[in-house]
Image (cartoon, rainbow, N blue to C red; front, side, top):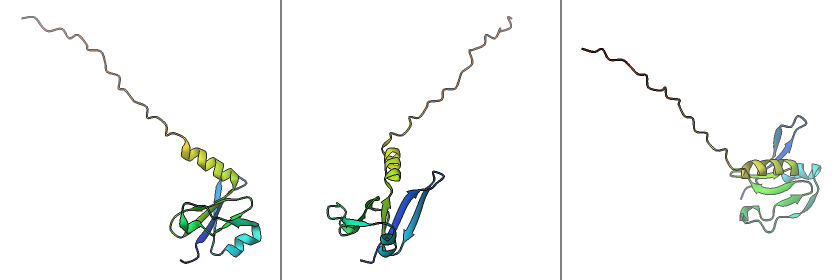
Length: 106
């Protein structure tokens, strides 16, 4: 299996979600400390990948991409994902009351 692309997802200073892809784990190791390896994921492709201090992951994010998220982003996206969809509002058209039309008498 080729080395997966590592995607780090964080929140920017303005509150926007930022993601950056890395081709190798070495670049991520310069910024984050590895504290272990994933040995219990139900996705077998993720087993053996590093676990970094301060990041949630690894998690699959498409074919050949492994995702790590900051705790804040993880919490925000999980809340959005788990929230029930908004109920659809039923729009009722107002019908006009019938108008009495006088019939000409013959």
